[in-house]
Length: 549
Image (tube, rainbow, N blue to C red; front, side, top):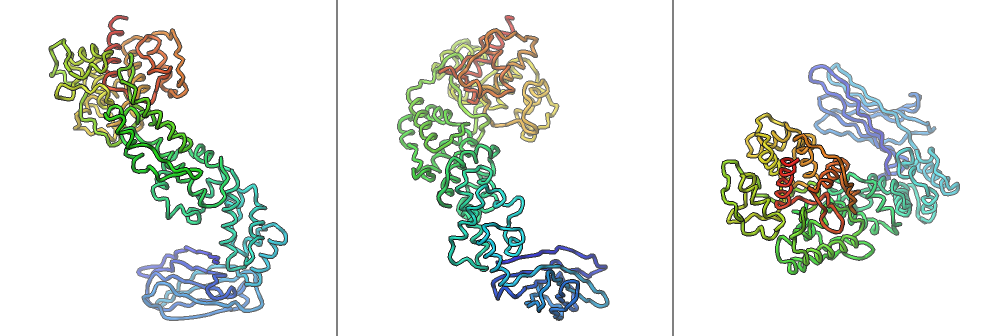
């Protein structure tokens, strides 16, 4: 075992002369015997002489001295056996002489013999207590911030040490760490488990075997929930903890996936994770064969996006239900039915269809302009009206794709055109809005009008807009038009607690005036994506309300 004392003291010398980079003292290394001290002196360069001294406390006795010419090598190593009598502290002094210039560095250290290490171990085992003095002798970390200090079951660490038959100075540090880990695994304490992961990634095997999971772990903002779930179990060994840690990292990352990436994410990670010996095995191939169309597959993915599943079993139940629901759901919905899920998922999906039209491309026909909007009969009139007015476009080949999501920049353009905000060249300063992009004038205008303000320095380009966010924008447009109706009927949605605080008033007011409804099962689904059909319907209805009130 090693006890290292580091000194990073750099002395400034004139002209070309450089100082020592470091003095390192290694006691009880086990490489030789515990009664030998290793002194490493790192030289930064220069030609001359190096002299190393080791003195007893207060310089009363010279224990060691060596001198040699500086060469190209960087580290000079010396083996020292401090002479009797013993002293509490020693000082190593390294001097470098180059011409007439002398540079000197010093480092104090304490030194304990093999016999003293053995006595400290016996003191711990007999007393059942680790004192700070014995911890210092044995290089055990027990101070504030250590895992040992955090443990409520410290006696378990001692009991584990007592059960080790070959406990000796050579292995006390490694055995102490393993005893700490065992006590932590049995603790069912979320704070202890969090510190365990922070302190012992190597010993737990996380550093070498959890590449993806540790990257996902970095994305976790709610560590309270993560470790609360981890602490529901007591772990018999590191492998059981290892299994649960990986599974919880996977479940946490699912909550960060946009719907557009969910299917591929699940496919690439299926059959990789297990809990309580049961491997996650989602019927992904069967889902494709059952649902057949991308529209229904997306509906299934919507249903499990933006949710934090507490277990793999809960994920599987939700997945199976989502597939069953998508298989029987025609998707024709009600007033504001349909939609996707997740608050913010842009992911890899490329929304090639620009829903917002240019005013110069106005349609003139009042008949059905698209051959696929019969899938959403409740939105046909709205889609046709906005298309005729040049507010929205189709995607080509007579298609509108009513169930596809709408991105934030697309909706900015719709809002600007539908409510006469006018384009703006005044840059809003969003990092993700290029000045020469097609949507910049509309994003700038919507920001200037205060209806779409983005998130800090980003607007959220390519992110699909959620139902609750579209409600907020529409409410701001309503207020901007001088219409601020009183709340008549407070909505009572089963998932009302899921509506973000910033969106609650907007959802309540728009529901009160009949502009928005739920999506079935008394749910509002605030995090689902707004579809092209329901976006057209909402914009059309808001324009009608403003014109008639």
